[in-house]
Length: 79
Image (cartoon, rainbow, N blue to C red; front, top):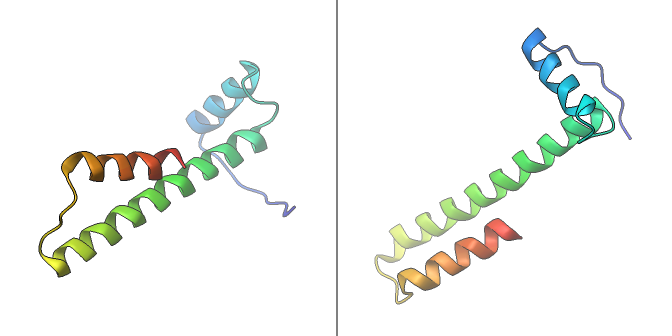
């Protein structure tokens, strides 16, 4: 595992410390890794939406219903 040294602003450091003190996480590193995982998942969902929009713009129309599109988006966000 790569080891890094980073500096936080006082409010961010206090927030991180509160997460650990609240026993939701065992360490600041665990909080940071969880935030990064969440950000990566969010970016994957955004990339999926962009790809669908690009494809839709190029094809013009779809035969999928609004419900089908929503279901696909939900699957992507849950996955």
